[in-house]
Length: 291
Image 1 (cartoon, rainbow, N blue to C red):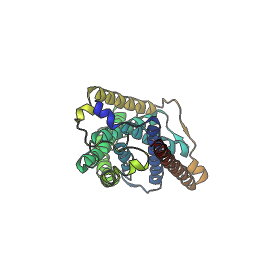
Image 2 (tube, rainbow, N blue to C red; image 1 turned 90 degrees about the vertical axis):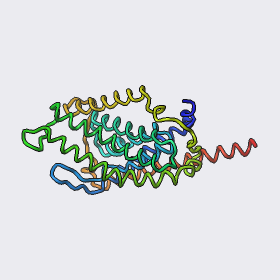
Image 3 (cartoon, one colour; image 1 turned 120 degrees about the horizontal axis):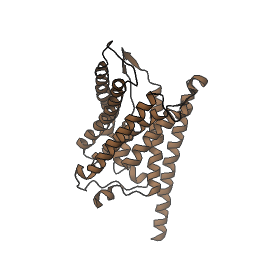
């Protein structure tokens, strides 16, 4: 376990920077997906679900926990709250499911230069997230908190719809916007982007098994969190919510408002990178002065 701790040896300020960078970059990408068209084939939607390669790359290269939670919070802030929409408990399910999926994917990679490990982690992260979402949607219909019967009188038809949607999201968004970009970016950025931001690259020579990362305690925690996500979504569908509002700023101010949110997310990203670079230069200056 001491080896595992060395892999994540970042200062508190660096962890916070990774958190904010992941939040702003993924929030920015969510705004871009809002502008992309969607195609419907009956009850099935064909669309770009998300640019998952952004949080996947950050989780693999940096700290998986802070990058995963930051990305999930970025989706809530920039994709929901700043657009005037907040679903209360319904957002908790998205937050937990996406954070879990990205965290597990980040911990699966021992060597960022190993394309097989990176590829398996990338597609696994998308599959885990979509599986949790599909199970929640199926459960809502079967339990009765949501009405959806694609085949009249046959609630089980939701399984077919969700199964097709799961395959579509994993094979379409998962390959085009998660697997391929992550496979390209991670090996090329590893060892190059970290020093630019004042961080050391994670040690890819450490040998540990997946059991060390996903031990029994971690698996139990993941199961509990997944259950909490499902319960939160069931309560939201049953109109039991804590805080919820829908102002819809886009309807009030037009689609140009999305570009304002994009600008805010981009500005936060640039400022975060600038601060990380500034900290690096200040540290280098102190090292030269001491030497």
